[in-house]
Image (tube, rainbow, N blue to C red; front, top):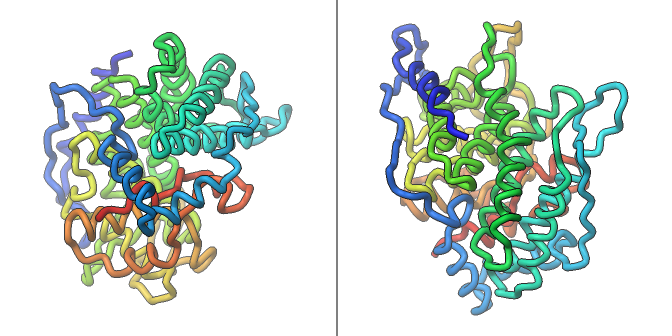
Length: 403
């Protein structure tokens, strides 16, 4: 499935004039889309083989904080060989007035497929590889579509990028037959990518109708599926949207105002802090997956994501931040930052801290403090039974901690 035309359309947005940008907004000049001729790195999403080698060595040596992260993983029921899989043909998220919502079946099984995949890569125990594959095989032989309300778009994005990460880890296991892997890839393309692509290429007069996380989760899914399915056009579609997309998930719209102190106001900051924190999870995942393929979205537009993450971390550490009125074309006008869910705990900060501070040697004092506060990070099932606890794969202390 090639999407060269859609990528071209996205690329045509590069030359939008920036003269009308207000103070503090991004004025990054258009850059060419990365059209690597080289093959994708596998595994190459949230973790690479180098990452897994590090995890394995550190856990075997009993080194901290990796061992604490590993212990959280192994204690989580989703990583157990006794996990019961519950595939269905249609997943409903949001009420359509007829069917009951059942999307918890999907996000729980996705969390289990990922957790058991991690246990295999770190322990080398094939029983966990077989468990992860059995979960993905069950769903790829059952799932035909996502339905319900408009919230099914969120299901396509959130569980799409997460499921693709589990599949990307397991693709190297010789016990996963080529035909079963191909069926899983077809499911990801047909059931998830189709919805992701349709949403991101929508044509609306008001593109700020949706908050940033709607775009971001679908961008993550597109990028992850592009790698999983070795489709460079799909992958580039996601990279292009991050840089130049018209919706609120694009970096210049998500971190839509840079204050004189260098902090970046997040698009959802006037809404609530739970959704704002989810933005860190999703943009962080996007940047890390792209990094695994040699594309630096972390550093794009003078580390704009870092500026947004520091703004969010500082406010949620109960310190004051500046705020400019946020308004959009559907009549939203937020004149103050929201304190709803302030201090929210999500397993998203190890990734931000380890990249900017340890990899790049940059200062990120508030992200550093938040990472220290939530360490060790767990995964799905460690943050409540509601869907918000499964919006990110987690286990960052194990997977992201660098030397």
